[in-house]
Length: 338
Ligand SMILES: *Cc1c(COP(=O)(O)O)cnc(C)c1O
Image 1: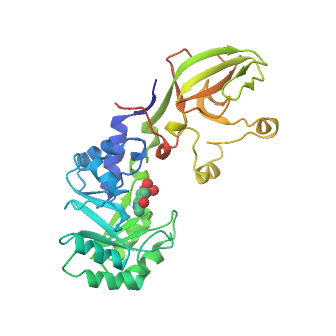
Image 2: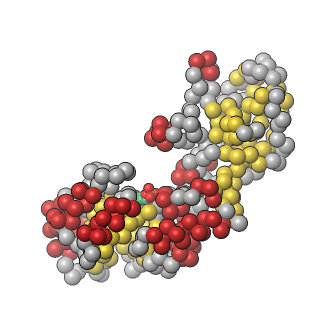
Image 3: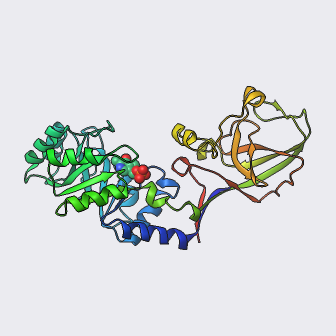
């Protein structure tokens, strides 16, 4: 019985269209779990949006999008000699080391690539001086599609971009995690440079009102105070119901990024205080009767046990209940678009 994602299709498509219209040359990012939608579905959606390029996270993901999207596919993971890198002409590689530039040139005739700078993110890429040098060295043997920068979240990275642009000029820059106003400012200052924002979350998950995650109630058991249930045989503290609901560790239920939990206390309070904390109780993401309910014990592989007090009318077996999820860590059993 499924953990399902319901999408209000009209609202979602409208948000996607408006986002792309507001941000010229946007490059959608479709990687990992496909932000909850699956990669295949995002590839088809990108085709429908009419963009000319999408990003995937890894070379392994190219195969999941190339049948469904007719444009270019920019691979975000940097090319390395030990990766099973596709050499298809639709692929644009990301290169961040001099030896990789040479390695790629030896394998592929005029490869398409972007040269990445090592920003304050500290992930991958050339230093500014090395980027300028690589850009010159790539010459005509390779098709350099532009330079790329991956910036930390939040505002205030304009000066860093300007520094890179001055040190290693290029006609086109692929930029990740720049705010809209910062992009506007760059475009105003550099009208002859093309800026291409790479966007995932703000595009696919930017209108959460179009998205609803629901779990199926697969069983309901009346319990009395003192009963023991579950793998851990924990004692139930009050009369009520134990609900078995779809969604477990395999779906990513109760997986939260530390930052998301810290910045949004109301959304996820991972542990209760006092006695409940001592008992290892945690508030579940399942909402029944208008409130999030406590886990009876940590989620199982595919289902979770949730406690409902006796005063609340229990749902019926087969009913769906709202579940608050983090889309980038959730694998749904079913995705329905209206
Ligand atoms: C994941 C990723 C993005 C998209 O990030 P969102 O926060 O989902 O928009 C952009 N650029 C790079 C390099 C990434 O790894």
